[in-house]
Image (cartoon, rainbow, N blue to C red; front, side, top):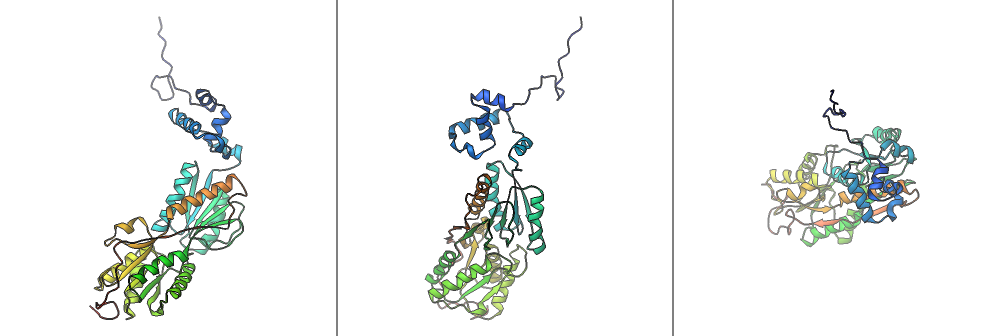
Length: 363
């Protein structure tokens, strides 16, 4: 008598292949309607009215049964790609990486994919990349520290963008407050001769930050010595730029007891240049950075800095963008302002009295 061979599954194990869970079966298992399950799984804005407990049950069951909605069906039904374009100067520096981390947090949470394009401050790429991303059917764009002048057919949110463009929402730092917390900190420590490292001309924040530094200095009665102002040159994310800028300040022969750098990366280079020249930080020269990137707290000495909530700014950009995509006409404000915070660590202390400072004595 012939024996019956077991039916072979697609993986060749002899086990009966389990049919993939579909929407209808998942809904039956949960005792819910397929429409309710679909709204939650696809993160529809209509699902906001569904109790969180029900949403949690649906996602737990989807994970248990490895249910995945059809991306193509979802796209056809909604006429959307569920893909976002993100444009950054580059992805290797602390600023962009921190903002991108917040963008990624929210997009992953909401089931969105994203493309990242790095323009390296090239004007041709800044103009071309948005069009290239639109050709790939992105639903919206986020531009980080990127000059923006385009009026596009999809929603756009910029981080540290300072151009007023119809249909674009800008997320910006309160730069006056940032200048106040930094300069008042140095002023209260007795510093009156302060050196400054400005950002590159192409950086979106350079002009607005410097304008506010000058305004706050006047309010405090601080005189800014033009010979103690230098600027970052080049587009490298390396501390080398801050190192070279500080070497110029030291070569000027002008005395200063504190230095306010454009960002944390340049502050790190500045500290290296000062130490190589025989000046102690903070005993001889106090140094303040800007941004509070992750490595700032782990420098030796740890860096005093003006914290931008970079990760939160990225998350806010993604959240606002998806709201505008899901509900056209909503969240269309020209500007969302976030507040800075001074983080005092080990690179600032009272101004030296009766001790040598750069410009007064060469070691």
